[in-house]
Length: 151
Length: 52
Image (cartoon, one colour):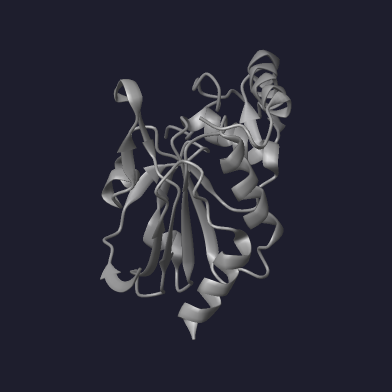
């Protein structure tokens, strides 16, 4: 989906005990936000590893939002040696704000695999929402899409 | 003036002095560091294709 929707600034507690302020972090850069279910999810870890290995090719700053708690997100970032932030959103604040919260069996809530490309004006210019838990977009497709939208 | 003290990533207690710095985080004690590393080791056991 391609469109332009300005997102208001938002904040989340980060893994360092501080407050992550989206606008302050984004500055004048392009950003790609990816939603993952948690550190226990192998497909999510694989997806994050692919992004980490292609940071120079993806022409946008990555930001991961996980349904993990603070410690879980910190463990995930350290374990995968990720060079970009992983924010815990166990209360689904941003997950819900961007419309990717879903309910699975037994009222358990999680985020769908999803990507949001945001331009320097804080506008979402492209979004991808997976239909199922394993619908992660391949990193080659992400690289292509970011490059195409930025032209 | 109260000096801001960083909280331990594991137990959330305020870290006295410098704490223990490892894995890009600060821990208040060896015990908390071990809890963190235990979770990292648990991830090693999981398959990348496993999910949900």
